[in-house]
Image (cartoon, rainbow, N blue to C red; front, side, top):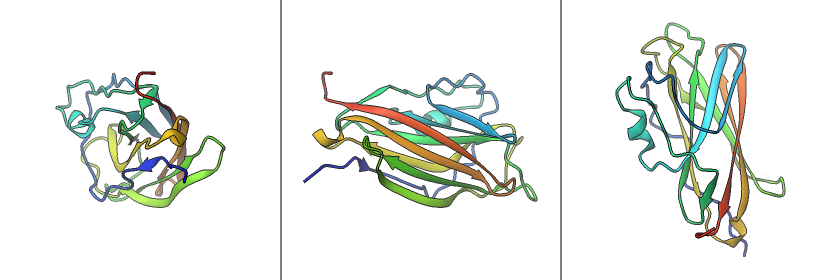
Length: 176
């Protein structure tokens, strides 16, 4: 029986409305894009306390551990942030979706677009906001070794634009 990459989480039911106005020097090596003025980014982090890091005071530079490789049975999380959503009466309407791509190009798992930030914006729309989405994963066995690719869509339903993001990480044996 073939092992599959273990998906530990998906769409969060809790939406975080924290903004980081002073965190302009965010350091991470993953995907960030803009479509028609709406920006989104996704990062893979091994920081177990990523939410605690995010919730630091606004003058704190947000820094997550963002390795290029993940050791077998080590847990990582993909987190999604966005900026400059259109609003209606102060409310944003952001949806997230994802696909997990196997090394052979087949799709292991996916989700339809699901609300991930549908609350009133508390602060300037240009701030960086954490979407109520994260995907936790770990490699469980030898079949999981190698490169894994995650396609994430972040859609501003009011602006009617989708920002496609792609992040990848290689799972390796411990000691590699």
